[in-house]
Amino acid sequence: MGRDIFRARVLLVCTSQKAQELFYRLLPDDKIASIKTASSCAEARSSLMQEGADICLINTPLPDGNGVQLASFAAKDCGAAVLLFIKKDGYDNAVAATGNAYVFVAEKPNSEHFFRQALSLLFTTKQKTWEEESKLSSLRDKLDEVKIVNRAKLVLIQYLKMDEATAHRYIEKQAMDRRVTRREVAESILSAYEYGFEWK
Image 1 (cartoon, one colour):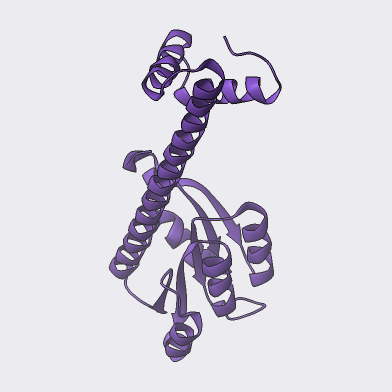
Image 2 (cartoon, one colour):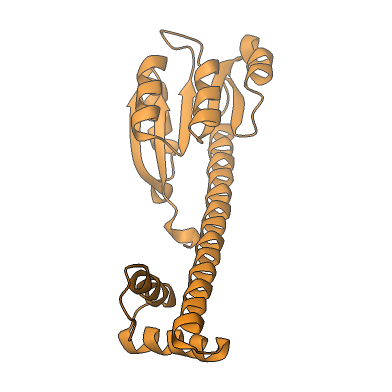
């Protein structure tokens, strides 16, 4: 996966039409897969649990809460990067209550320039996290493939009396001839012997 294909699912939690329009205008179109909206904490929680989100923007106050608990839930339980907008008198409490690296608390009102910077930071943070997760997933896949191929080699050594180098070349050649991955060849070998069929 590359940097250019990351697209964020955004959840915008906001009751103010004016603020909603501002966010829609400032959100980077080229980095968004979808935008969902919610007008209460309950609606946002439901959306997060059912569909998830990569980015969660919360503009407080909300009719059924101050948004702080929602921000923590979105970050800790749903893996979203969160930008929580809160009035100055609630800022310190919000920072102390969220205490999560993926919750960014911002005072409001503030300038449009600040909002742009905050959104840029949020998207950059989430993209880096996504890239690291992609790398880890790729490494896990490669490790799994090595394990499966090695098991298949042992089967060939045990049942067909090949040595390790011959078994390795055999799997490589089968993958090339059949235009499949080494893992698929290895899985076929293991499956054949699991069910008592002779591999040819």
